[in-house]
Length: 426
Image (cartoon, rainbow, N blue to C red):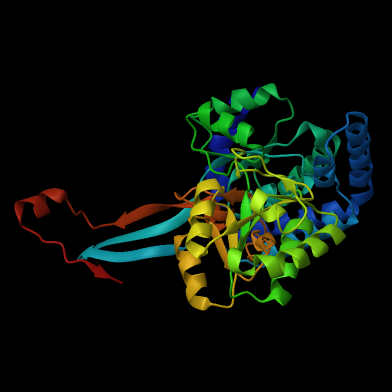
């Protein structure tokens, strides 16, 4: 059966999954957690195959780090499953309850989106996160992971699907696509797929957006900034920058550019440079920065919109918070940006005017994550302003429907003036 036929079947199964009781969906997540732990050695063996092939094919170190699935990653995904189970049901929440007239009652109720296609990078843990979030929120999911994780994804999907069905969820609740040509086929399934979430390079996300009529949610890249204001605390600033850059360099929420207020540059930059070099970070910077500390000079005309995903950090000097805001809104990716300052008024201005999904004061950009936000996990991070923004957890995977309960009410009575609306929120 091809992808088009499979998605049609999933579309028919999606109302059945949406109607499944939360207890059954939670039971499925518990079964998945149990299956992953019970078969961990098989998972690790499959991952070793993927890692060996990655070495043979000279895959970039940043990608290798992402595709590694070990005890630590298993502990992370099982903790996320536990957190997800504890969260309230996102389905069936009443967000509007209004009487339009005597006996005519309108409610707005959350419901699953339906069938979601997620095309994601070489990260096996992403497969666990995405499938579990979709099941908890009552959505059927088509999963297409990177070819670099073929063996790991195959066993993970098999264990997850088997556990979900064993718990009583519909057979067609999940589908794995493995072939690259299936992506183009999936992009044409506008009659049976309700949403696409691509996770990968800027070029890849743009390709998806330009080749489908299915709604697309996601972000193309993560060019995150930290601005060190003149009213900063050095005891906070250096650890924040080191964490933002080095805690997990391959993540889309790692800091790529640091902006520094000119008034503090002479004192601050040498101390920052020492800490960065000790952490193994290569510093790139403007010619102005190079007059204070040694850097690889960024040539005039080179764009500051650069996602390194490596131990490389760009540094630029700015006159004030407004120049920092302007730089971020011009060259950033609207993902996550932070101001390091003890001046709350300056911070408020920064957080109001920076046009990003996440704006922080004195906190690492690495906090931009569904699990760290208490969402259980995330299917991805959205820089869109419509439907969902920032880390997309359960709330981002539901829509809503309007339910109107009447007693033979007809519009003609209101159009003629025989009856009048009496709006009252209940």
